[in-house]
Length: 254
Image (cartoon, rainbow, N blue to C red):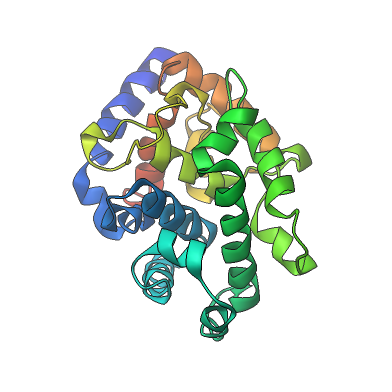
């Protein structure tokens, strides 16, 4: 296919998959449980953090997280007690365990006390064309409290050539227009034009099959390469193509 034909093909697939039915099997259903901005972004951030591995297991454990927080994430983050954190013991999703979760809760409280909301922090460090630099500074701030070394691996750093798939997916949920009924679009101070594709094995495989990604590894350099192509297709909303690439890989086995 020519580049124009690839764009037309992906436009059609993106429109097809960005539909409320997509939510039924996707972790984005968790932040959709809430209406308060802070509840949406906290539940979304924690859900994105554990979004790797079996999708059924992701959803099961994300719902457990919400339950642990009394179905009121912001209130729990801001008002939890040491005893509340003790109750988290036993939570585990792959290598993310209760030790990691306890620190994430403490650090989120610190973040809200200092910056009032998550969007405010990312806006401080956002670039004109992307948010990858903001992720790097977010990780530094997030781990500015005393913490177990093991917990740092659960937030990726683009400055270390990570694709940062999960936090880029979280950005998509928070920033993109909610009209189609999937993304929530609660962050108004950041633009969809700044978003990067949440590159994973599915989207990477399809992008390579279509010839819009040459790099073999799903790393930070691959994200930059894919971003350049997707921005040429739609500079105002390049990450809509995540739906196309992911859907083709997971649902169509393209």
